[in-house]
Length: 437
Ligand code: SF4
Image 1 (tube, protein in one colour):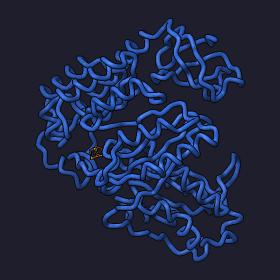
Image 2 (image 1 turned 180 degrees about the horizontal axis):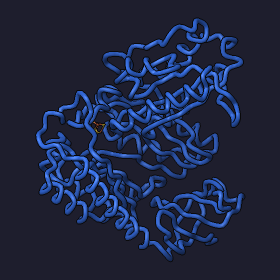
Image 3 (image 1 turned 180 degrees about the vertical axis):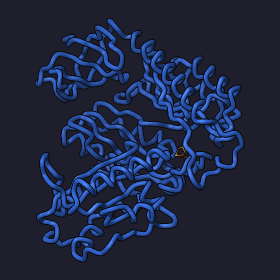
Image 4 (image 1 turned 90 degrees about the vertical axis):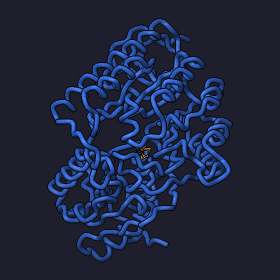
C-alpha cells in the first residue's frame, strides 16, 4: 500500500524512446504514478521527477539515451532522474553513473516504479539500481491511449527467438502473454473511454499464448467481437507466425484493417541463416502474395537491416533484388548496429560505414518509390478514414483502413469518426482528400 502523502506535491515528466511497446508502458507508468499523486507535468511546469523509458536497439539508441539523461540533468538540476527500459536493463551500471540519476530499473521493474520512487523521495539515497530479475517471467499488462482515437494494447512481451543480431531477448526476457479474457476486457475498457482503434503490440506477438492452449489467432478472433472498437491493427508479426488462415480471416473480419507489418531483415537466404531467422525468402514471398491475393489494397510495411555482418556486395545485391521484386508498400530500413553479447559478433566480414550508408540510402530510395507506387493506386478512390486531429495548417488528418495518412479540410465535428474520404492527390507521405458523404 502506498502512502500518497509522500507524493502529493510532486510532478513528473516522461520521455520515451523506441517501440510502441515502450510508449504503451510509459503511459501505464504515468497512470500508476498519477493514481499515487504524482501528476504529469503540464506545459511550463518544472518536474521533480523525470522518467526516461529507454531503448537499446542500436548503439545510436544507447547514445541518444545518454545524451537525453545529461540534457535533463542540466535543464532540471533539482529533479531526480528515473531510468527504465531496455538500456537500463542491459547497462544499469553505466546508467547509474550518469548525472542526477536516482533510480535505474529494468523492464521487469516498471510495474513497481511507484514504490521505488516513493522510497527514493523518503530517503534521497544516491543512485539506486533495482537489480533486474535474472529470468523475467512476469507479464505486466498495459493498454494506453496514444492520442484521442488510438490505443496501444500490449498482448505479449519478451522473445525466445534469439536472432543473432538482437539483444531484445536479454532486455525483455522470455516470451509470455496476457490472457485472452484480460485483453478483451482491456479492449472493452478502451471502447468505453471512446477509443476507436487499437494497435496490438508486443515484442513477438505471433508467439502469443506460447506454452498454453490458445494462440494469436484465438486472440484476434476474440478481440474482433468487442463492441465499439472499429479498427484493429497488428503492429508487427514474424512472417513464419502469420498463417495463411489468419490472412484469409483478416480479409473478411469485421474490424481488422488491411495493414500488415512484417520484418524481413534481409532478402538473402545466406544472411537470413546467419541472422538465425525462422524463415527464408520463399516463405516471405508467399506471405506477401497471399496478402495481395486476398487484399489487393492492403498496406504491407517491411523491416529491413542493411550492412549486417556477412553481407558482402553480392549478398546485398541479392537482398535488394528480392525486395525490389516484392509488391510491398514501404520499407523501414535499419543500418546494422553491433550489439555487445550477440552471436553476430562472431560472423566474419564487417561492412564498412561508407557501404552501410550507401546501402541504407539505396533502400530508402527504393522504399520511397514503393510508397509512391502503392499510394498512387488509390488516387480517385473513396476510403474510410478515422479522423484524428487538427494539423497546424488548419487541416485534419487521419489514416485510411490501408494506412495512408490523409488530410482533409478541418471540421471538428468529424474528430474520432470514421468517414468516407475521396482521395484526390498523393503529395508524398500524405494524401490530400475531401469528405465524400
Ligand atoms: S524475433 Fe528476433 S529480432 Fe525480433 S525480438 Fe525476437 S530475437 Fe529480436
